[in-house]
Structures are given as C-alpha cells and as structure tokens.
Amino acid sequence: MSHRVLLSWSSGKDSAWTLHVLRNDPNVEVVGLLTTVNTTHGRVAMHSTRLTILEAQARAVGLPLQVVPLPWPCSNEEYERAMRRAIQDGIKIGATHVAFGDLFLEDIRAYRIKQLEGSGLKPLFPIWHEPTELLARQMVDAGVEAVVTCVDPKKLSPSFAGRRFDHAFLDELPEGVDPCGENGEFHTCVLAGPMFREPLRATVGEVVERDGFYFADLRLDPAMDNL
Image 1 (cartoon, rainbow, N blue to C red):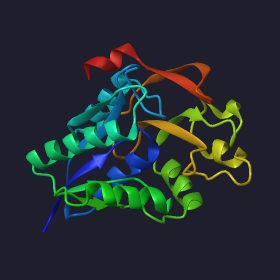
Image 2: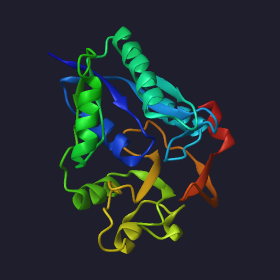
Image 3: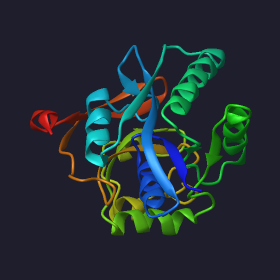
C-alpha cells in the first residue's frame, strides 16, 4: 500500500534531502509540506527563513504548503494544540503519514512518535541514522545549495552565519560539531538541489544577534516572486 506523506519542512537541508529520498521511493506520494511559522516575525522558527522564501521553496518543489501559525512566545501547549489542528487538516487531504528529517536525536524522535499517537497519521524517519559526515558530503555532491541562517555561538563561531553549506564549510567545522548541525549547532535554508524544479536566488544580508543566537538575514530576489 502506498503512503501519502506530509513532510515536516523546516526550510533546511535535512528536510529537503528527506523529500529527495521520499520521492525516490515508489511506495510514497508526498502530498504537501508542513511548516510552523512565527506569526510575529513571519519566519520559520530557528531557521529564521522568511515566509516569502518558504513559499518560493514550495513552488520550486511543486508541493502545497501547509503553514502552522505559532504565536511568539509560544508555550508547548499552544504548539501542540496548533499541531493537532494541522494533523487533522492533513487527514482531510488524505495523508497517511508525516515524515521528519531527524537524524539521531532519540528524544526528538520519541516526542514526534508520541505526538502522532492516536492521531490517524503515522511517523516516518527516512534518513534516520544516516552517518552525518557522509550525508553532509552527499548533499553537497548532489547539488544541494544552502545558506547557514542560524548559529548557536555556544557551539560554533558566529562567523559561520551567512556562509554557504559546501565542502569548504564542512572542512572548517571544529571538532565535535556535527556536520549536519543535528545538535543545534547551526540551521540552514535551502535554495537549490535535486528536489527543486528551479533554483532560488537570494541575497545574504546582515548577521544579527537575537535571543542568544546569530541569524543571517536571507532575502529572496524580487524577480523570484513571480515563479
């Protein structure tokens, strides 16, 4: 039986690669992207991706975007209530599963499984336990183009914010930093790759410190709005 899958889409490289993997599975039909957006700032939480870029990504991969609005600040109760509504909306469009781009954090995986218990949707983890050093290089070699939009300065120098996620970036990561940033060292925004029908063009603006993290402001080229 084929799976009709909603993909939890962060705007970053791991969720984009998960889409690539899912589309190579003949038993899977990806029916949409599911993304939480901070309504105060109009951005994807942590990745700081603007809604305009998020919408352009959805167009580029050819999938409908289901935005889950979240207040700021957002309590865990508010988050879970919003996600329950999103799950019900997913069931209405015939989804059977929700896929996540998690790699190795057991507590996050367990939380996602618990969140979906009894909901009518089942969880999928298509890239779970992929070796992150190999996976990061594989992404770059396959043509994934991404920008580092958020850095946790407790784990990585703020100088990495705004850089391209490429082999040079990976070569310069300090020892102990996961190459995919799975421990929260950094987050990315994807602009191109094998899952995109056309690449996005965006400009990296200033890097700002906010709430203890460093964010690089990524702006979509205005010409991309009409694609």
